[in-house]
Image 1 (cartoon, one colour):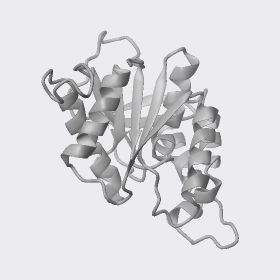
Image 2: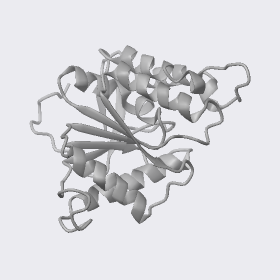
Image 3: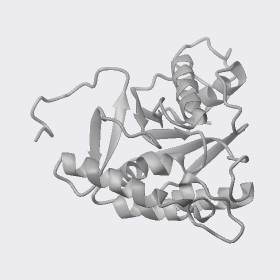
Length: 236
């Protein structure tokens, strides 16, 4: 069954996509584009919260961004490696939804799973475009127009910025849906996420916004040249 989308965002864990590009997703969903989120794992090794709790939070977070479909490939948390079975599962998702754009975490991050997610997605996007890959079992070949990378814990100079002033509060609301991760509760373990992490992300997006004269922006990176369709269109 083919269900096309415009934007397909992959994350290693539920909450990765929201941290890196929740505002961009909400912005384009508002404009009528279809976005799908695909988490590779259920984050079953997280210090706080349970798998069931995290899944409910992920569904609520997607709802707050306006995303109607979220998948989970149930790969092992801290067990993401560039291996055939994981690549095939991601290829099947790419071929099922046939996105124009694919997003993955920036490949340099303090959490190894985020970098591994980026590498897996790169491999899968390439293989998804090979007609004979999968011997017809994974759907018809599909070539993605571009792959872009969003930041989670990293802070670096982005290749481009997206103004999310109109949807920044949607992004922050989606992060607050993850109470088990970002709030200190009785019995919770102290982690970087429970120490003003949402406030840090908000500050980062405010700083990016300041670079383009906006209230908030999200930063992205690319491994290939970005095509400007018009030299003056959108340039300020």
